[in-house]
Image (cartoon, rainbow, N blue to C red; front, top):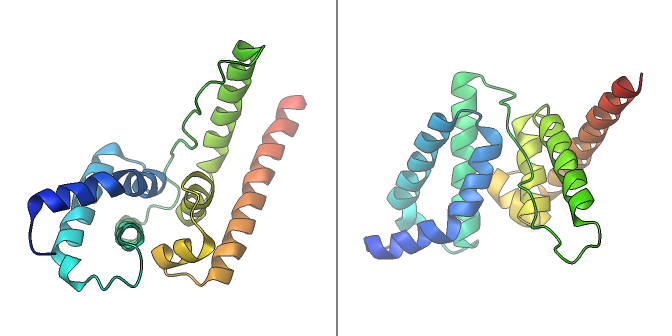
Length: 175
């Protein structure tokens, strides 16, 4: 808060995964993502003196990231950028059929990635924040400026749409 660039580097390191998740799920183009992440941290540094410790710093930065992405999408009128979802989990080396498990996991990840890309950016972001970042409804609400009930409702709708997309694809493949 006093302009110490080394301290700000620590802030960046501690929040880069969260910011990357938010931006990565909302913005499709890699070059745009780089520019937006840069804008997020410039805005964070610029507005850091206004941080009031009412929330965790990471939540506050997540809020800046989310709003920056929304503003970008509104300006470009981009609704459904194609993005991958769910980075591959570590292999379970002790599983007796590790190769089969890995293949099944990769297939499931690919299916979810493909179908998640069909959801609106807000729904994708909520799923990532809740399921991958393990954030609470209230933390997600702080980031997105949505009431907690709305976050729950949107997550329900997002899961329902994702399920419908997956089931529709499987029904088509079975025919």
